[in-house]
Length: 247
Image 1 (cartoon, rainbow, N blue to C red):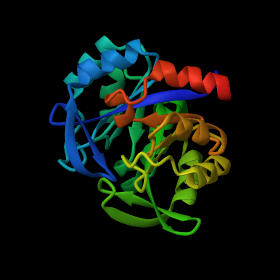
Image 2: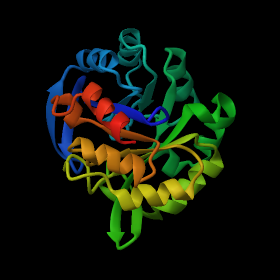
Image 3: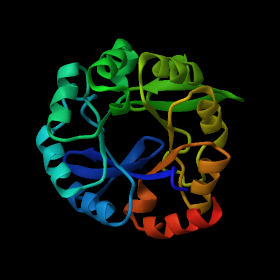
Image 4: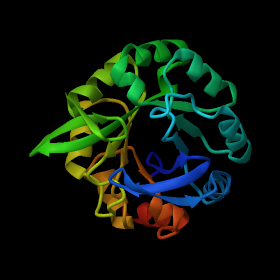
């Protein structure tokens, strides 16, 4: 599984890592610095940091927090939340971040993806999508933290994101988020087959088999998870041994 990545995610609000279920019932988990150090030492391939309140509060991501985080981790770091302009992106890269994740701003201004890719390189620009199933074989993109549908087809938005220059897609299944019932294999496979850039599956990890399933049947390039790693229900070292034996 040398080309498959395991990616823990820190959803941060008010300076603390939090976790909910289907984007609701948010609970406090831990200090982001402590968790970041733990993941850096436990074999994670990358780390994602989302300032989940930044967009809702119409502010930029907390640069000081990101700078401190970058100082305690050696693995690649992706940052998202409150990114609306090229200036926001430039400030994030200035403190050593490897990739930026754009979600809400891309929906209101798709050309931001293109501008960011042209300025900083596609490999540094991630399109993050919050997606919910609306009927059999059909998914729509949601905004405002999964609260409002854009009525935009998820597959078409993924394809457009690639055309605009995104180098990677993080595909967040709202239906699966925090449920631990498994990733949305049908959704992940559909998006993975529709684009030629890496797809990171997110939402639904509950056991090792779920990771294997989404990385094989779902054709994902990476699997992102939060609570199963935060609460040490699955240890990354053990997960990688399992995957190496089965992929």
